[in-house]
Image (cartoon, rainbow, N blue to C red; front, top):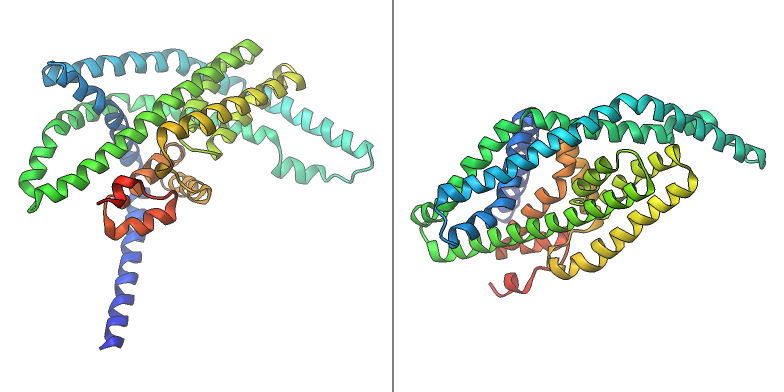
Length: 349
């Protein structure tokens, strides 16, 4: 009997792994459809608390959604107009920056060889060439231009999600057998997700704005793009700030010089220490953290499955999974393995 149980347990594990592989393969194959949908869900979750606030102030549902729609359209036109033209200009001039960075790399290799160091120039150029970082940044920014082409579909999906959000809890109460207990966990899950994404969005916006202003003061080209990249990658803790800083620092090095590159790097360092390590944790709370290993693995996994957009959404997606695991006593142990200690609200359930 015990042997049968062990076999059945092993079979369940193999079945779960097989389902996971099939699910991942399906997500990768349907990436062109899944990416706009995930962006729509991400935007809708951020906008939902504002919509509910407008409804509590007495606005009808359609007017609250219309107000959000107007705000999103204004932001979209701004991004498509100002940022879109800057992205196209940067991509066109990127070969010149590529050549300049290659020249700087060659000069650095010659300088080290002058001190007697045996430097393999081909190895450096193939694996540690800073110009490749600029190419990666260009591809990531080019991806943003691709997102604008799906803007109407994303916007339409956001509207339908917000329309459904107001009536979904009532449907759930009717559909489930034990509404009080289930709704308690579901409400905690939604509140935690909204809180995490809301706080993260606010501090990401602060980070991106400060970086944009600092690079503008230094006179670095495309400062708005680097501020936008800092805003987006701030959703990826620890690793994201480093990735966002590298292309901007290289741009300062190519355009102005070594001193400005150091000042740019110092600006990123100060902003991320003050905002990311001091202020944000006080609002976010210790229970909503992920380990650095999980952050890196989620970045690699979601980037492989969904491409550059998956890298930007990797930590929010993983955090949503972690919050869902914290909402149930049976899966809290797995949430602990993913990161921080569950909050007191979870322990008391």
